[in-house]
Image (cartoon, rainbow, N blue to C red; front, side, top):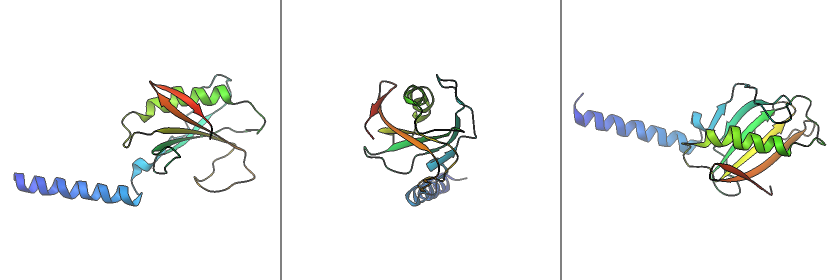
Length: 141
């Protein structure tokens, strides 16, 4: 392929990618985590559901890491487990995200709920973190 055609092809590819990002239709916006079991300090069963990166948070770019916890109850203490999910699971996965998230949101749900949909019959817990030097810092959500 001649250099002019390669440049034109690269331009068309970049333009198409930009349009997909602007429309919110890029695969990078939502990644299925495949139900991977994630270890937490309490030893409870936590399964990764997905990662959402196309919805702004209160601090700008945000990465939402969503997990399913069968039998989740609203009165349970999840502080240490959610901190561990942020530090040990989410932070390493934010490397290379564009734009770089300013906020990480960890959510736990008793069953999968489509992002953004209300499900009053399903227990859901949310915590918000900023992060610095590879550590999550709990923020009031």
